[in-house]
Length: 117
Image (tube, rainbow, N blue to C red; front, side, top):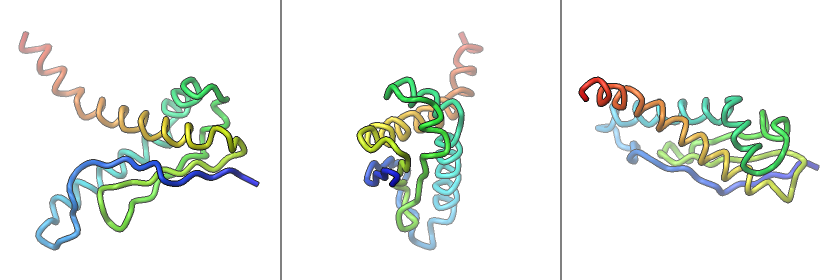
């Protein structure tokens, strides 16, 4: 039976549940899409595997995220055969996916700073 861990949450942005928040809701939706894309990437799978000490194949395709009640909070779930490492894999996946997204968002600013020097 696959091991499954729920409860590791990655949060950011603001609550976009009210109708005046259309722009915020769109931004949160885009951030969530970026996060889930990063979570499914080979780069994150390899980083998690290296961090936790498992095979990349034990990570790739076994992490998923669900957005909680239209909020800016995503819950990451690991479903795989390594019950003892499930929480560590879900946590590392969350951290590494957030890092990938943040790095991508900061890259243009870093480039501008380099050009300004």
